[in-house]
Picture 1: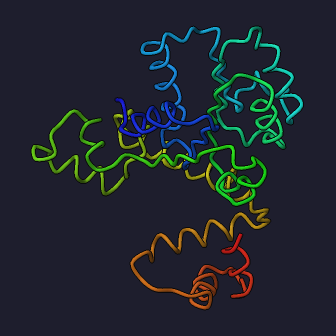
Picture 2: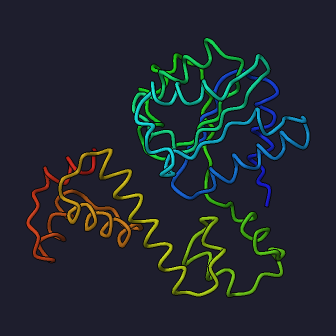
Length: 255
């Protein structure tokens, strides 16, 4: 299914020479969006495969790329002429100081660069400074309500109670629609939660107490329609035999 966001990106591509940074929560469809853009380039603009460089930096075959120098050295060898190359770097946060390579590509090569990333650092003010204003941030969200029905192949007004309950219970992460059973969906959603907490929040925020973080998130979800405070959360921790001071909760929250 082609998302409307790909149309917006196409319009950007025609009018900008900046790197495109595609951000969003894990598994919201960033990688699929990149592949849609690549397909459109081949079909509509006649770009050939040898001028499209795609790398998923979470793939083990790129595990040797640790930093900006590794990234630049590898990609530079793939650029063999003066024609324009299109570089797609998926999950760029895996590369230390990647922004140095991006800046160098822009300064020395005839390229358009597309980047995806998941964690909060990619959305921070740090990145704007490091990339010297040479990028545009494009935020990808999970499916909109209408997109969910397009994915399911039904009209909104003809949807059954099952579709609506699926929306309320499981949300609209694109990949969850590929699972046919409730058990498969539960496994996917649990894995998604763990990957966000461990790879993004835990790693980026340098949180040492994973259990406290999990319980804090659980409390927030269960009380999402109510007001709460560090003190009320501390009382909740006491009820599950965990003693955490309100000040500690504030520190975890800020991270």
